[in-house]
Every structure is written in C-alpha cells, then in structure tokens.
Amino acid sequence: MTFHTNHPILFVLAGIIVAVVLAQSVFFLIKAWRRGVAIGMDRAKLRRIAVTAAVFTIAPAVAIVISVITLAKDLGLALPWLRLSVVGSLSYETLATTNAESAMGLTFGQAPALNASQYVTIAWVMTLSIMVGIWLVPVVCRRLRNGMINLEKRDAKWTDIFQSSMFIGMIAAFVGYVFCDVSTVLEGSFAGLIPVAVMAVSALVMCLAGLLVSKTKIRWISDYALPVSLIAGMASAIPITAWLS
Image (tube, rainbow, N blue to C red; front, side, top):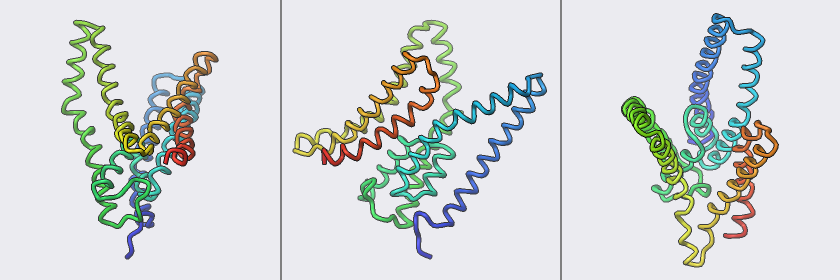
C-alpha cells in the first residue's frame, strides 16, 4: 500500500478521535443544561446562552481552519485536523513541524511529499512535545498556584509583575523565532525579514481592532480580531515574499 498524507485511513483514524472529543463536548453540554434547569435557571436564558456561545465559537474556528490549511501543504489534512481539534495551536504546531522537518533536511512549506517515516517522525515530535504541558499541570501547577497565592498575600504588585513577566517570557520564545533569520540581511538576503514584516502586518491589524473596540464600544470586534489578523498576515505574506525574496 502506497503511503500518502491524505490517505483515507488517516482520515478514519483522525475522525474516530475527533468524534470522541465531540461526544465529550455533547455530554458535558447536556450535563450543564440539566444542572442549570435543576438550580432553577430559566430555559429561555439557557437557550440564549447556548446560542451566544455557539455564535462566538465561529471566530476561533476560523483561526483553526486557517491553521489547518497552513499545515496541510506539508502534512495533508488529516493530521492538522486531528491536532487542532484536540490540543494545539498554529504557533506550536508550525514550530514543531518546522523543527522536525529541519532535522530531516527539509524546509517547511517547501518540502516534497513526505514518506511514511518522515510523517510518523513529525507526528511524534508534535505529540510528545505538547504532552509535556499536560503532565506538568498536575505536577507543578498546584505548587505554583499556592506560591502565587502566598506571594499575592505579601505583595499584590509583585504578583502582577511576576505573572506579566511569565507571559512576556512565553511570547518572547515565539518572537525570537520570528527574528532568528534577520542576520541574513548582512549577507545581502532580505528573506529573513519576511516573518518580521508579516508579524508587523498582523500586529497592526490587531491594534486597529483594539482601537475600534475602544472607540466604538462594539465588543464583538475583539472576538474576531485574532482570525482577521491571521488572515491579514497570511495574505500579506504573498506580496511580502515576492518583494523580499
């Protein structure tokens, strides 16, 4: 049997896992509805909550679809669909895929058709790497939470600074990846500026969305700011790549 990243068997396997996740979602939705009724919540209010929640899942869903399309060129549709339906994000999945392909002498977005060994290697890298965060939660989060509570009792200001520092540190790890090839400018190549320019476009769109929210008070704009900035960044990558390559 010839291996292909879009082989029907891969879709069947991914579909089974996604179906289990959807079943869990339906199960907890029913449990939440019944609990709401049991404590005396109005059914009309419950329906409004459910409809509102469903509508506002469209925005993150758009971002997920974009992520799947981005990864599909190298990995096919089945694996990105599975990864981003269960656990994962565009930034992490792209980074894991890029690193795995680089170790095999491939370039993300320009790799030829993967063979079975390369495909399995990338899938293992993506899966094992993100599982670190899963097992770290029960191991360190309780101690970290207790430490944060004790720190907040002693000095609330330093608690805010510490939390902001951790968040900035996490973002810096991904931002560093964007700027890692800027030094190629010294060699006469401007290709290293492509991710920087794309990030700048996405950041500009996000800032404009923030200004619109503050000026117009239309809160739903903030829910769609992420997918819109993603789309704008990806769309800008085409002319920016043509310009700087």
